[in-house]
Image (cartoon, rainbow, N blue to C red; front, side, top):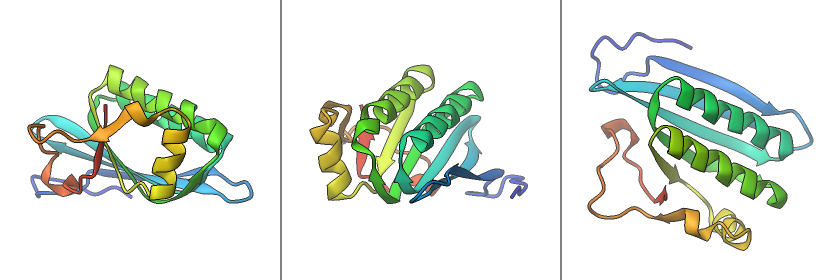
Length: 149
């Protein structure tokens, strides 16, 4: 799905639906790219169950977004049901790599179960509440909970 922005506030110039995994539970993602003030922001909505192949494909997607100049990423996990526990470190590393290459990451919508899973995997230091003085995300993405650090 492609729509033309032409200065319309909050318009989505590009949206892609990705199938990450066709396995037992399945996983998919939707990527929406927005440009505001010359800065490209991506909304990445993840759905389903992240198993090994889904995490690998999601990791490649993050690398592609960084290579295409995306400077801010909003990772919406509100429809993410579960992550295979052995894949949590790989997912966190992919997010850290994006952050090193490109910029800021906003992680939103993690359930208590997923937060606990991340903490049990030793990744609690990677997710922290957004500091009050941090720059607000662009208007269409202002649903904040936690920032990756």
